[in-house]
Length: 194
Image (cartoon, rainbow, N blue to C red; front, side, top):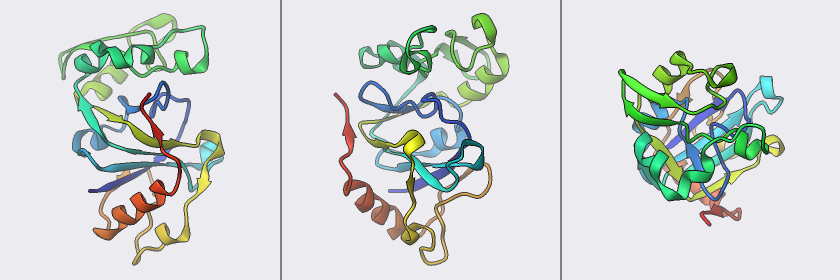
């Protein structure tokens, strides 16, 4: 088991998308989506730009991975397709890509990663679909703008700090740290798939 931590610059419920019984990471964070395995934890830490600097916005334990087409067509995730003009949960759906051939072709629904009026955003399509992998979590915690303090244990764990001070992510921690993080997460009531 590993722990990936990264700085969440903007949190709209798009990446991650913690709605409708699952927490999903389907866009952005290509390196994490490429390398995270089942059972790994992902921790999203706030930034100065969202006034949640060094606080834990969410944590998810990876329980499944799907390709974009599998995600797009899976009955469980139809509610995660964006519907503009409705609630924020629906407008910021992350289930937006289909017919994905990495580096060649992908269709994109009108979404947070589109241009205005639903026009395709080639830059976001190329970046997001460069890794044809969606991370799914059935066990997660999401605090959003009510983010919580990261305990000192994880700020100074044998010289390691899970809070990332730069862009990108961290995942090189002592083997015991992810287990300690999981114990901490299990002390909360984890959200579980409906």
